[in-house]
Length: 118
Image (cartoon, rainbow, N blue to C red):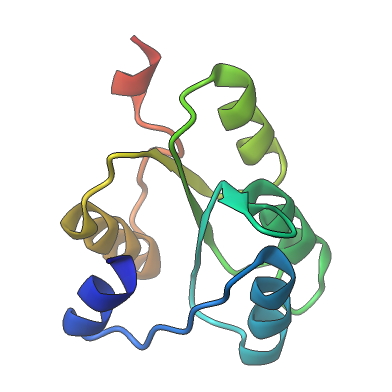
């Protein structure tokens, strides 16, 4: 769903089926942004963010993690592991597009929306 929506919005989208392939593609292609889910085969999206932050060529690539888990410990781990932005499902494709455009434009957006803390 996200791939199709972002492609329709004009983004070039490359997808990976698991965390290891995501890491391989990111280090080879050096994308403008990495969007990942928290739960991935072969490791979590938070672990992927952490690996990308540890690699010299990908450390500055912004990462956006989407998760169905609103548990504070999962969100805090993802942010501590280097995910630039964490968003909670349901997360509509138009919201993802707006966040990506803001991140790429260098606009300041909340790392974790405050309304989720209520």
